[in-house]
Image (cartoon, rainbow, N blue to C red):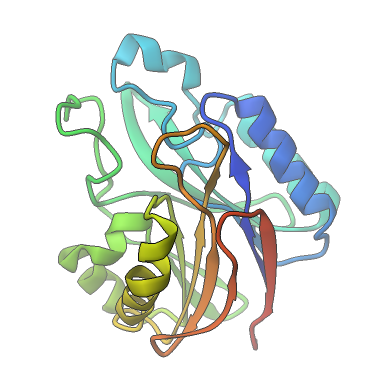
Length: 245
């Protein structure tokens, strides 16, 4: 299985630019099982204001044009896609992670179970969380998905561990300063990953210049709680991994 972690620039509030970025990465990484992007990459993590009238301009559901376009792209390039997006469905928002196969099929649309993606004052009737673990079967493997703070939420982690995943995708949006990443957080994330699977792949978004407290990108291949390969922070990059079948 070939998986590429794409630490790429996500522009807040610009779905067209972010789709163009996904296309550019996929066209340089064809014939992959999955190319993975970070949390809420499609609209940009900070695009929502949690005012429902304002946020309607970023509404995307599975039947909408951006998702159809991504499915067509996956088929064309023969590379699967993992991408975070804010889903608006039946009047409610969730932070989701969508898995599309390299045949353009939707394998999983997971709604984040932990609440850290939204501000405290967000209306819980409109901005809500999922209730089911994100896991799918692919080429005989159980693959799990945890979105950002899910990986630090005991109940969500316990539910994932009970499914005995062979591999976990851990897309995030986190904005630690570079020094903190190097001195503390990289090791902490690796150790935490070791608590829910033998192999975990983590990928973070990269914010555009000028964003206050920006996400600095980076990606890790974590095996048994140890970082085995990584991408540097503060620059775009892709890390391609061969994972035994």
